Amino acid sequence: MKKIINNVDDVVAEMVDGMVRSYPQIVKKLPDTEAIVRNDADRDKSIVGLVSGGGSGHEPTHAGYVGQGMLSAAVAGQVFTSPTPDQIYAAIKDANHGKGVFLIIKNYSGDVMNFDMAKDIADMDDIPVKSIVVDDDIAVENSTYTQGRRGVAGTIFVHKILGAAADQGADLDQIDSLAHQIVPNIKTIGVALSGATVPAVGKPGFTLADDEIEYGVGIHGEPGYRKEKLQSSKDMAHELLEKLGSEFHFEAGQHYAVLVNGMGATPLMEQYIFMNDVLNELDKDGVSVDYTKVGNFMTSLDMAGVSLTLMKLDDAHWLQNLQYPVKTIAWGA
Amino acid sequence: MLTVANTTKWLQLFTDQVNTNQDALNQYDTPIGDGDHGSNLARGTTAMMDSLNKADLKSVSDVWKTAAMAIISKVGGAAGPLYGTAFLEMAKASKDRPADDIAVQPLIDASLKGLLKRGGAVPGDKTMVDVWTDVDADLEKGPLTSDQVKTAVESTKPMEAKKGRASYLGKDSVGHLDPGSVSSGFFFESLIQEGEIQ
Image 1 (cartoon, helix red, strand yellow):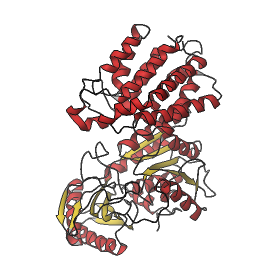
Image 2 (image 1 turned 180 degrees about the vertical axis):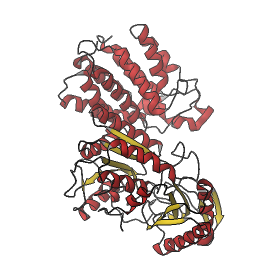
Image 3 (image 1 turned 135 degrees about the horizontal axis):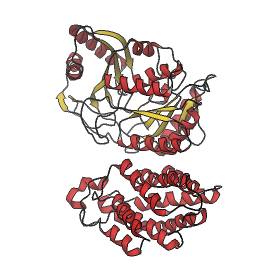
């Protein structure tokens, strides 16, 4: 294992410190937690608070999406391990400005259990809390850490769309209803070229031969659905879009947002090549692509590979929310 | 009936039992788990007593909530959220009761419902739910006895694990006591030992 770290037990704490010290105008850390919260002048505006979080190792998820127009707080657990309910609750308390708090949870048993507990604690303190579980990964049903489908890169579209709604004054019930409308329209699938090394473990979670790829791998290295010899970017785009197409049933007149997400060790050059192939394929299907995004948004440490997220834009407001201005570390343009 | 004083004493007795039997709990967890149930729980119960001794406890509900928060922040794994849930449900169930009329059975009943919801286990899956289910039923009939607790814990031995890490072992889990059930046994033994609650 070759990594720029100090003690493996300190990686999360030191990363959080580095992050908040790099962007103090956007975020700060709640004392005695690994919860990262807004630190801009408007942080206490009376809107619904949005809180997400999960295991670390997926940076810039989730702390990179804290800021005006997106999340109020993000709670970082240990690498690939859910944060504890007391920390999530601390974030909920900080994010509550009289309008309640909405939780965005990726579908992993540990995350669901710990966020639900935090919600129960908030209930006792009469903070209204609602939540959504994001399960956008269509690769497999049930997995090492999940009942049902896994929650992956599509989660950042949820952060963005709900964040814009909250910033424009939507109430907790409206956010809840919007969340339940958009999540079934967001689907993701990935392909891995190499496995990720968790610092405390010291070796990759899985290995692939030099000329081998695996379709459908999860963001913690959970097994996918098929291994193949290395293929061209065009072929990979074709395979992933075929899977997504069997969910969406592409037809002319449909509108989509497209996210190509790097898994951590794949150069942007390759991500742009892959996006180019995806857009060529979608052109052939005759669908309209209204929004695109490329980059490392939901990584898996040093895994090489990409994931492809499509969101069917059934409502014009969803596109407006994707385009709504934000000030975060990682969302970008 | 529960009071701030006797509830705190119950939890102190539980903490003592967990600390004394820490290694034994780890050993129960070794063949069918990852061998750390005793260490994890002991770290949590010790932190729990620290918090309880420092906190300004105005009600029975405060005691359970303080205990729950300490457990969930220190224990981790599955045991943290599960014991945390059990205690938090007791905090909720006692919150709106008159201070001099908080019986133990309705609290255990609320905890059991919380455990079923949180962990998704059902009776017979070889988890702490088995002990809590039996104890809940026994308490409905009258004061709990040590024999009843023992029987409830022992009942997990012949079961095949269906939930939790032990379920990966399938049939090989048969013949071992479930560690979460053993520690739950300590919890209910401590209730009996406290002497005045039931």
